[in-house]
Amino acid sequence: MSEKASEEYEKIESKIEKMLNPSITLEITMPEGVNKEAFLKLENDSKFIETIQRQIKKRLK
Amino acid sequence: MDIALLFSLIFALVMILLVTDRYHRSVTALLGAFLTILFASEYGLFNIQGLWSELIGFIDLDTVLLVIGVMILAESLARSGLFEFIGLSVAKIVGGGFRRISISFMLLTILFSALLSNITAIIIIGALSVSLAKKFRTDPTDTLLYASVMTNVGGLMFMISSIPNLIVAAQLDFGFLDFVLISMPFALIISLVSLLFIVRKIKDNSDSSQQIEVDPWEVVENRGLFYRAAIIFLVVIIFFIFDDFIKLPLGLIAIGGAIIMLVLGGQEPESIFSDVDWGTIFFLTSFYIIVGGLSKSGVLTAFADDVVQILSFNPVIASNLNMWICALSSSIVDNIPMSLTLIPVMQHVSVVTGFSLNILGWGIVFGANLGGNLTPIGSPSNIIALGILKKEGLSVSWGEWFHKCVPIVVLQLLLASVYVTFLSVIL
Image (cartoon, rainbow over all chains, first blue to last red):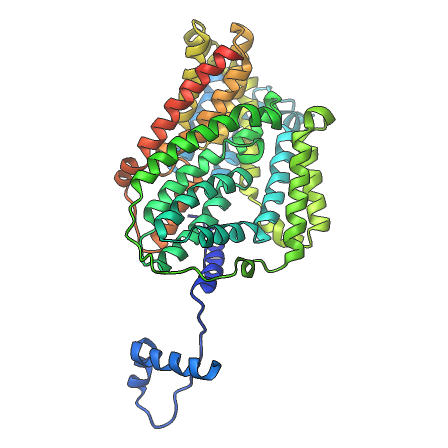
């Protein structure tokens, strides 16, 4: 697949993907006094993400 | 060196480079055109004093303008979000699992590729299918494979649906209505037959509890632009339909529509120009020069005489052979050079044998459009469908392609044979 076709596909796919499965990306700076390795692991921690989702629900209600 | 042999070698070199995909196809064609000009000038076939006007004489400007105009119009329409809007609306209405959506997407693929380039159509359908497959937690492979086959069926619908159609229309004087009356009914028949085949093949293993809760209008960024693009496109189609009465060159209608779209469409012209497939335009114009060299050196006439020897005994067999030759060659080489080369050959065959050029022309249209699906590399939409799947971590082997797609394509080509035979009898 040519680079141009690939870019075009990615553009449309991400637009549709955002509509079907809306998501946001937050940049959270590491707070002081926490372990760096443990902090970085949170990005893929499903329990942590669920906690954030609950917080969002609470905030947006 | 014999001139005919020299130009045959240039043509063979171009074909080998195209098959092996050594360079971008436009670069290959430019190289072939350059060699043609060089040797034709050296051997006195082209007049070096009036070289540029001679070269322009080889290029069918109406076809080139028609292709550029249709590309600008289709690109503007695609950017309006109309097709994503239709896709999401259909998915929302159909709902009830990914299988039902996949089947409805086959119909959408035919519609999209009838109005857009096959490449744009498969990119939009691919993006919709992949995103929805993720939502339904299933595999989009079969949907994309069958959709890529259906793009070439949609390519048969209208005169503007594929580049071989535009070439045949401009060079053999086929109008928009000719395609509606002859090619579209056949496209509808094979759509139905292919769909019956595909429905049995697509399995349902998706999470049908998922609901599509989106407003399809969200995909349209600017409703004013959306309506303007759709209306201008529709008006151009109406002009194409009535071209038999208004008698304007097709290229003029297309480029006129494109200019109006650029003026009134409200989209950034630079951005539209950058997305027009200029590689195809270079490829097309360069190939006209290569064919011009073949014609001037006598290669085309000699080849056409040989073809006459083979085809002269029966018009029905001639039409069928022409279609199959075009289909098989389009499965390994781009269908644009095949159409450009076969048209003058068939014009010669028609003059010598008295066979209907119309039937031979329709054979080129059916063969060039459908033949590309015989291999994964035969059509750009196949290459893109496989590229999208690869991007999503799903690779498809040639074996899987042959197993899943070729039976449908062979069926389509057999039906095309029956249809060409039918046309030979009634036209």
